[in-house]
Length: 92
Image (tube, rainbow, N blue to C red; front, top):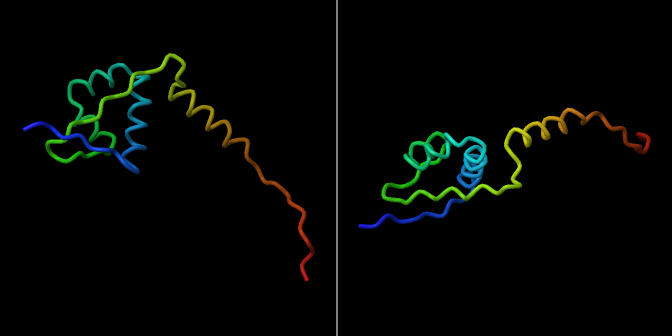
């Protein structure tokens, strides 16, 4: 019996993207995924049906943004958002 592949959808795709970004930045995580993908998937909230082939991690691109830079830039952007005044018509 051969393992079946499954297409990740919805939240599983987002969780796998988070796993991929972290694995690109953390070679230890990438190595753990290669050795025991089901355990690492479970750490990221992904549970595959029994007998399902886990997806391969996509190869890291040389110009990929690392997770720390992404988190820092998102945090910086969020801290600059303030109150904005908008003109409005007077209450009647």
